[in-house]
Image 1: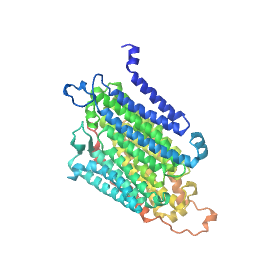
Image 2: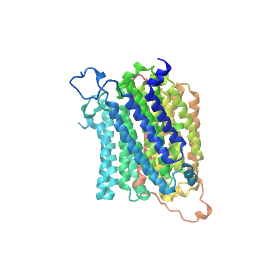
Image 3: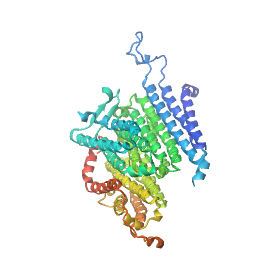
Image 4: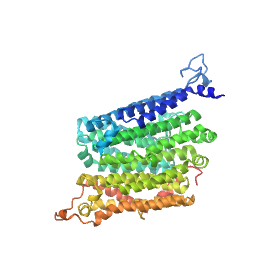
Length: 124
Length: 495
């Protein structure tokens, strides 16, 4: 396997790594708290995409028994577990974003700003 | 019959309470506290019963929906998890019983929501301890974390920002953990901890497993607040309401430490993380750096809650060090310290909360010997807990440090032994600083004229503090029984 095949063959993983990096960048470098939160959602989405893309199987179908596809060959059906897990992870992510927005509203009520530098200045 | 279902009953009891409190809260506002206390009492009794049952007849495995693992989700109630559940639920019971007055004062009119979230927090913690499934563990980590963000965020003016920081860092940790178990799942095809323990030795060389181990250690390290990943902890504990910090500080990081023990010793296996990869050494080094760093910063603090928060960073380092030593004495030290530190930190944070409630501040430099006259019993409990933190025999804190020190000697790691000894001295510095003021410093001349009356805190707050403080003495004296029991918790092949 040459280098090009290695890079092209894993293109979905490269994409996920870029997303993870964007998310981490947003959370650590951006000064606006809403942008930090956006970075966090991108980071979570990258993990979710990792599960989904790893569960893909070529030439396989949805895991519902069909008469013309024998069950004894697992290659015929996609593994549904990663998708089910990610449904839960998406729900967890939604709840996290909800709590985060509630906290942001509280911060804005207390300080009238969402900029990290200004907040640290105000908190001294 | 109830024994078979015990692993599921304890988390579900808390979940049920967290739903019933807001429903009944619409009808009567002051029902929240009694329901929360009764639930905590019931689960403390259930976990005590389960603990005794496990000792007498062996581990309980509960299969959700009757599906046999590895397909179904398994809840494991073995020696280790039954012990930690018992510790968590007992400390939680006393802190919840204590919290009536502080919550009424700091969060007036919000009791219903507050206790509902507290119950959700305990659902998460108990679930994290009992579950035998990796993804289930992730869900419970997130339940407990979301509840603790909320409990911290309702504190003083700076609390929402501290909670937001914790939320961002905590979510990174949980996502790392999720990524790590993704690697494990796609390599092995199972999420069941026992099953993985049997499968992993066949694929030890794979770099995927190594990356998974690193991601999981980092993710749980953030939850546990091991030294370079502790950034969220001091601010969160300082600005949270005193009842929240008294609840989260003693048990929150301990449950993270338990999850770390569970995954390293019971999923990856002792041999893998300590012999084949040097992850255990890394954990031990970072933990000892955290012990020194946390102790020194604790000395530099002026505010009592913040000092206790930095002291938590140092104390969690002891548990991390015990995990990293990866020998029987280190394991005993880590598990024993998990118990002792939960009791000590609960006592100390409850005392700090009581002082804030009575005096309106907890500035160490304003302490003087009028505090001793005003709150004799509270200060006595504080003294016991402080001496236990320093490690004076026969108090509980001495014995966990003793076993950790034995563990470092067994590994011939003299540097870590020096860290334990030095940090005991540093602990003495920052606690004796307070004790000296409380027992010896005369008040300022202007204030001295006022007559000092005894002004002890209410019984509902005092009794939990005293019970935990007496518990420290009892645990210290009875430690040999506990240690004998900890031998049963060790993974096979450790001795």
